[in-house]
Amino acid sequence: KAGVTQTPRYLIKTRGQQVTLSCSPISGHRSVSWYQQTPGQGLQFLFEYFSETQRNKGNFPGRFSGRQFSNSRSEMNVSTLELGDSALYLCASSLAGLATGSGNTIYFGEGSWLTVV
Amino acid sequence: AQSVTQPDIHITVSEGASLELRCNYSYGATPYLFWYVQSPGQGLQLLLKYFSGDTLVQGIKGFEAEFKRSQSSFNLRKPSVHWSDAAEYFCAVGARSGTASKLTFGTGTRLQVTL
Image (cartoon, rainbow over all chains, first blue to last red; front, side, top):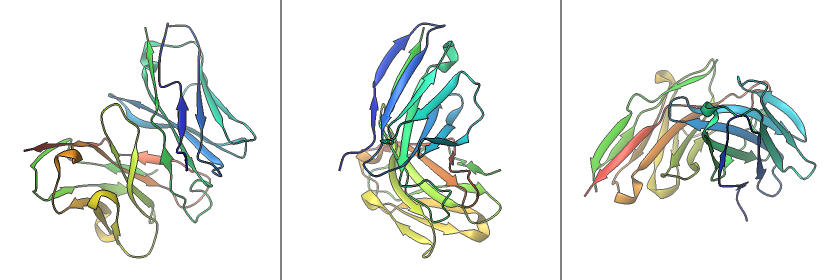
């Protein structure tokens, strides 16, 4: 069974540009979350989508947005890129996340490395 | 709000020696608990998780962790470390209630293994 797939794996963008990252969750998983990992701030939660609805959002500016499609694939977009947005962006998928109260294992992809110059 | 503390930023052990990585959490009730490992340039691989039941949890690669409610801890252990275990290890907590379906991570512990 295929794992969480993220594309592209590596990309370089210029300040002011925008970027779109894609995530295909494990088949059957309906919850997709995004995390940003930087050396200074560590792993931080961006947002979670479940059945095409944003269910939870972290403390990031509005430049960071996302969406989820009917097939559970998700994209995140960062507009007006800043140097500080350089990071590893990780996508995670689970059957239904943790909010159901029963708990679902959360699996991560390999990440998309974004460098802003 | 939930939080996680991994007090050891960097640990060095000899191959074959035992390992214990510490994790303390702050949460109003019993959270979901996870340990992930990250090799350089890679994503996060799940080692093990605690949802309920037996407080001693077995994971992949010979790792285990013990949930201790009284100490708010979820320490990761391995009886004999292999050189391939060198990586960064992250402890994470998730809330059991509400819609806060997110993981809060510790700052990680980098494990170096000497031969």
